[in-house]
Image 1: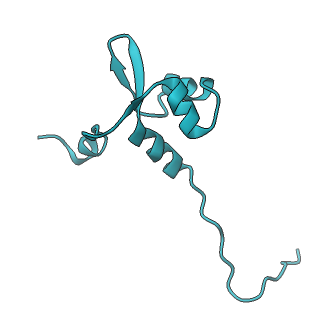
Image 2 (image 1 turned 180 degrees about the horizontal axis):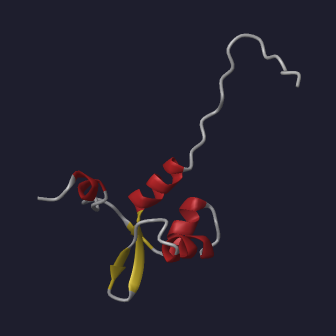
Length: 82
């Protein structure tokens, strides 16, 4: 049996494997940034022989993890005086 944690990190059947250039295009960065994410083990990746590929779902998870929700204020906005 595989644990729940391992199952959530498994590749989806229809998951596209992207090159560094393709991953950089999704992230709107230079190809160096996805390389650094892989090097620092901050994102999931797959070794296909000597090639490194990044699952598209891993990029979406990385983006979702960095998402910052806006703060909603109730009532009238007032400044706090120190």
